[in-house]
Image (cartoon, rainbow, N blue to C red; front, side, top):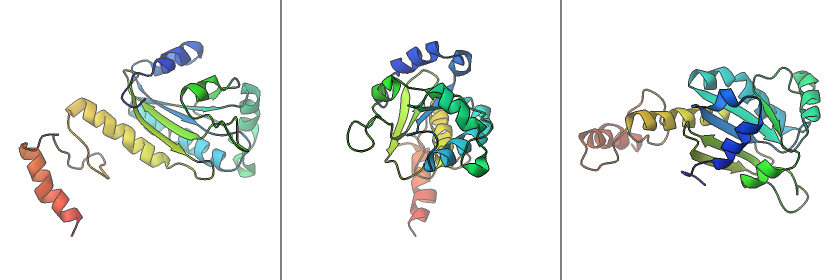
Length: 197
């Protein structure tokens, strides 16, 4: 699925109101198990609170679970101090049929949690190509800052054709995917050698 066109995203965005918000943008599509649980609201509100940072770099964040739109609505009415979401700055998809989670390969099909989605994250570029997939088991939440960093790194590689080393953040040195490149040699000598001392 990574580096393949996300044809299902095309179908998905045709069916939902915010079509105009996804065209020509990066998309972070994240699945979470269920509304009114424990780890889920901690992630959802962080995605929502950081939505402007994502929007500023041309990225739309979309959440999804197997709950209904009525459940999502009630979840947003519950105060954050009580474990709810409060006001949301991102759309939440109601995947009641579980078809979207199933097609993205994150629907649990066994055990006590059968029928809910893993904590799955998909970074899809402006050409609707899946660039990143990560899936957490249910008890551990995601690092939203790391997802934001990954989007920035993929955008950088798209724009400049360079590769981003481990821990790269905007402003740090990059390389060309070419052993003979002077930029790559400089990275090895000035950055990589220093990281291991």
